Length: 299
Image 1 (spheres, rainbow, N blue to C red):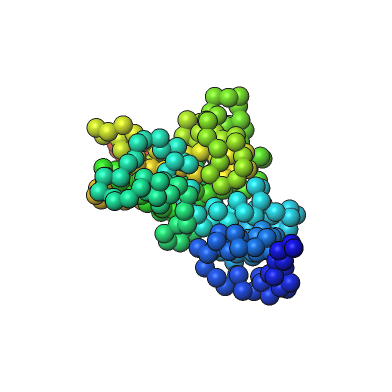
Image 2 (image 1 turned 30 degrees about the horizontal axis):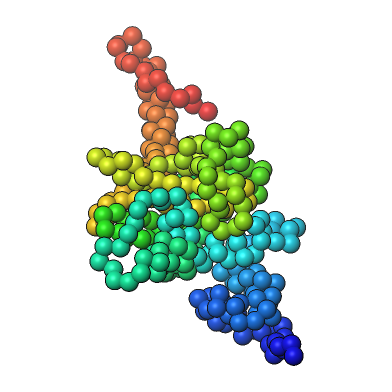
């Protein structure tokens, strides 16, 4: 006698209302219980949870309702918002074995190196993406996790993982840059969707290099993007080292993006005032060694 799936009799709306209030940590186990649960999760819950998490991002990805689903599908966007891809999926090939951890290496891999839910909330921000994109890509829209998406502390190094997504990726200058032949292609699958085509964002000079050890150690920063616009990568720093590099990045933003334009405007205004004063005094002092201030033309 065929086994009857008792959960198939439950109303979809009722299941959605129950599941959406559960922690996302239990959704994977719930999908294994019944085909009905798995179907409801894929068809409705992923979309609702992503919209609740970041409605601005979802609106931009769907082009204000023009598209039915984001690039890669709703499950991929769900992973992007709630899951850390793990060290292996972001290109860390080092032999990271447990030193003081008891138990099988398999569980160590699953706990630390493999994909897992983020240990804390990682908001994706368009402003954060603008900070790390180079100036010539400033017109491209990148949502990137704020500092930082997830941190893995090993024996010597501290690995800081980030993730994000481009809006309308195939029409961006970043796509035109990385898709120039096979120079920037890497042998790495996407950490969030089924895409097997990924490109290196650092080799193509799309992201600025702020973090990563730069002194006596070899620089280590990785950043990749797949054909659906999913971004994932990692920075490495010495374990226990204060986050002064983050402070240096903020100083750079303040000095270059805020103070420099203000000082430029201030000098320009002062120059206008000096040129007017010298011009007024110059008629009576002509021929007496008075030097006129040469500045911007007075409107």
